[in-house]
Image (cartoon, rainbow, N blue to C red):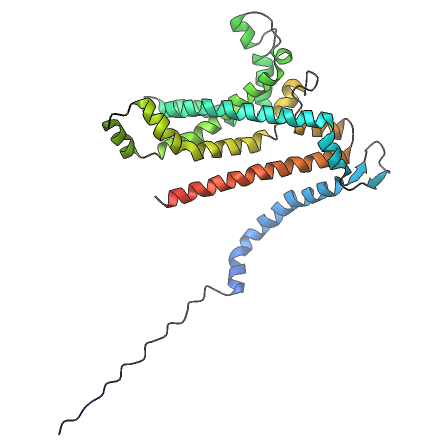
Length: 309
């Protein structure tokens, strides 16, 4: 008689999910960041909220006791005032001119520095130097050492006694900004060039593509996101340009170079209209946030592109 032995499989073990940590543990890890977060809120957000509040008041410093709530009236004044519309136009022209020319020169220098030659590290350091100069020092340097009609470098080389600042105020400011911001664009584009695949470029050369075809059909499309990033970051910084305008032209002649930051300065410290100046400042911050949003999207797309490689 044969005994039949029935085997029963053991029940599979149920693995309990690993807890990532309690709420207390998460707060312990985040605690070292709290002082920096609180400091950032105090330094940036609280003054901005106060500025929004001041923008709803009719407040002239010459009449300190006369303050009244006017709602959005200051914003209407800012958007319809002829001086402020002119300042907005000048801001767009100065920013666009500086970004475009610094981008073109930065691309040319990046292409040159992407090649190997003796002393490349020294040349790269020298080309970065203008970006390390303080903006007010750079503006003073160009105003007195280069543009001065009596002893400036330009008139010393080409002769004559042209007052470059009075004759070409916008060009004078844009040239100073381009000199200072070209290294920034060059570094961004140089990083893009060095991330390009050498194997792909070599395959294109083997297939008979010349240098111009490789640059226009392969390098420029590859640099598109880096160009967008440089333009957006440059716009964020240059839209708030005050040092060059204040030092070189002081908004003149007339109001030829008066941009929004300088107009806010005049409204605050010359007209003493605190409410109107606060409204203009809020508008500038909103425009900067819009540009910064596009910049963050470009940066995120660059990170995703690097992760996919």
